[in-house]
Amino acid sequence: MNSYPIDILNQYCPSRQVLDLLGDKWTLLTLNAIGRGINRHNALLREIGGISQKMLSQTLRELERNGIVTRHVYPVVPPRVEYEMTPLGASLNEPVMALGKWAQENYALVQQAREKYDLESANPN
Amino acid sequence: MNSYPIDILNQYCPSRQVLDLLGDKWTLLTLNAIGRGINRHNALLREIGGISQKMLSQTLRELERNGIVTRHVYPVVPPRVEYEMTPLGASLNEPVMALGKWAQENYALVQQAREKYDLESANPN
Image (tube, one colour):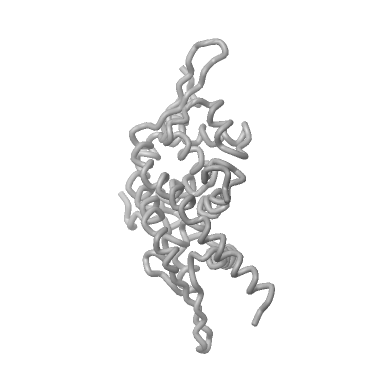
């Protein structure tokens, strides 16, 4: 029984742990890639620019542990490892893809704002 | 001119920087709080459980720098500092709130999956 409302802003609320998992760039990028149908471990490593083997494995393991993706190992030589969303993970697809889409559609406005801010900070008044 | 498609998975794409900004738990929590109408600096510090003064200031400065929030200082004693979404920031509200909502609605399923995984890891076969 919870005697407090479920709220991510409350650091002791179990939903905060979930937000902490999602509020991570490699998690969001990995989910975005799997959401696009990039399923093989090797393809994820190649397509997610800048991710290390270790960071990818760690991110995928946390996603599997938290019920968001499943891992399949195909007994071929060399072994083929594929990931897919669980039904729970699939329900996360929409907000995750929406965040990525927002970044892709608005990066130029963000860049403009940043340049303006940095210019004004360098030249106050 | 871009000679490559805009894609957050490309580490050299300017949209990746935006995703890096958003893929941060304190950024998501701060945006979630402002999206709920928590606008004063002091109220944000109180309502976002676990955030430090320094982390809040740093997060808000980055959001201001990137054109997502604006900062208003009211010349009262003591000075009152308030934040609000820019129109650009307002367009980010929906995916950010959706992620928070997902965490709040699905934390129990995530927790179950995690407990099952940890139990199986501790007792293989």
